[in-house]
Length: 359
Image 1 (cartoon, rainbow, N blue to C red):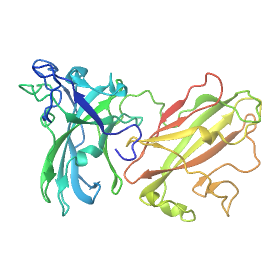
Image 2: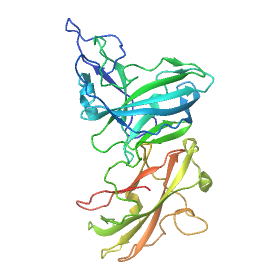
Image 3: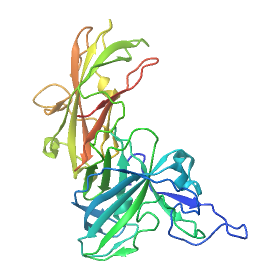
Image 4: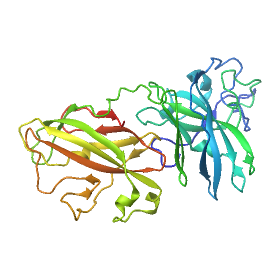
């Protein structure tokens, strides 16, 4: 999935053997099918199903589509017990995401189609891994009863203009929190998001704006960690017009800047350089780990790096003991995506990362 951290389309290969002991061949269309295995019933999750307009970009063209999730069900490891998969997927939980789309463009959509651009994320933005079944057990006499409708076969090879399709995408998720978002991403049309359940999930994140303890080191502290208190103050969307004085790449023209302001209180006894924003990171609801914009020049109207909407540190200053300082960083997200989690990685032995909901 283009632009999504941790996501991709991987190949699973079923290892069932033929009667003569050789590997089963062919390209049958059942996923995880076996006579008597993987028969546990999947659990249905509530998913938003509003139809939205988007794009699907293949190697040759960009097509207009109307698209939406139809079902999301959680399976079990037994569903794929006859499947050989990469080590990083072993122990994960299979989710079956069924999506429907209408080709509103002028050319046929050829498979794999828009379903390949979907993933599922938990509340902190961690994405699942969309998986493509390249080969299935062609010797099975019946599909697994555990698979939802449309998940025991491949999608259509082609959908003509005006045609519709219902396709199932397998997404492997880490054990733990329930999914919070279904995300669709296309490099041309941005990101579309749908809530799973209430869209909040349960991931142990701190509430937005909560103050938490951490520590920080810099070149002036000579290896000593200085205790600080960290408070996210705001996460807000801006406009690309705010960055009109900067030379952005072509890939940034279809994005929205988000401004993340965090307050730091020095509760130690040493001065600190005002560079704590180096420890701030952002993950989006669409599953992206986003790096901040760097090297914005000093504003002509005020001292400090950045732009008037998102002020950085002031030159030649220090964060004094018992004082506070608020720093702002800028992140570019595709249109339609939004921040899900703000994190801070402090400096010092044993310090743990802090993670907050973005809103």
